[in-house]
Length: 391
Image (spheres, rainbow, N blue to C red):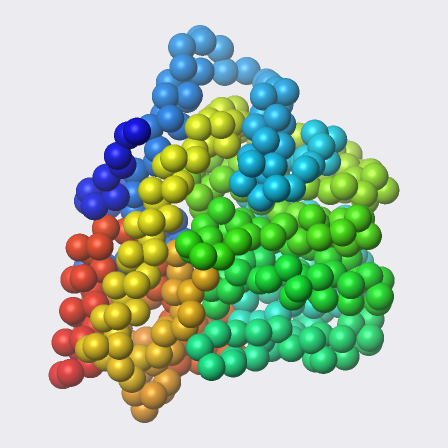
């Protein structure tokens, strides 16, 4: 068994990397430790480069079609990792989850229609709805002790008023919940009851902390499956976001035909990037051992961050973290405004965290931290936060 080294420092500066080369305009500061954009500072796995190198041995990079191996690797991964049996015909390519969500809004709603989402939530959800002249309907998650829960009474009250679609974040970004089967079943049944199409963003489905289990929303029942569209990708899991290759899974034949009309006839998107195909197949075929070691390392980093705040900065509240590598932090007890906190973190601590307000008003005085980096990087960042607050 190969042992992967997640402690290695990889210099990503000057590679046109958003995380390292693109933060200056947002934070109006230089020389920050970037713990914001949701990609990892770990090396992309060697089996991805091996597969791409093998493909590069052929001297032509022309038009291509998705191979049976491409579809089979997705089907086998879903069955092996999530006990979800899907079929080849259900799978569609998208050049990323966010573009996929935008295409789904085009395919299954009209200008003025309402799209429901549970907030705070991944901020591009807002963009793909508002920028296409649909209406956002928000249902705030409830904070219960050290974790967030869905407010089913509020959800139902919003659905009753008429929502064309619901965007579900499963697992949830940024609050780090791995929703239970019971919670997902309630959501699915409410959407069925009120004739609301459920779109489940499951891009973080493989990044589940030990002790928790991801449940694909569409796997719960046949009825829920027929009213659910699932968005997944290997990009977060294996650090290949730059290859822009995701899968959209639709079991309902009528919905598939409607989606095809938009993707193939309207936008004319079929297959994307040849190296994205090669990488996806490699990840879903050879990625189990690498992912197992990654999850252990991420859990250690989450534990380290939470313990550090508890012992050194107890006024910064952490939450039970069940999924993703993006812990949610509450700085509200420090008695500073959100704007003061933002500037202190950037100007004094020299750390770039995601501004909680981009996820919704519930994110005021909250920040999201990316812990998918060497522990030594986290240790320096936490010490700088501690020193900045002490001063």
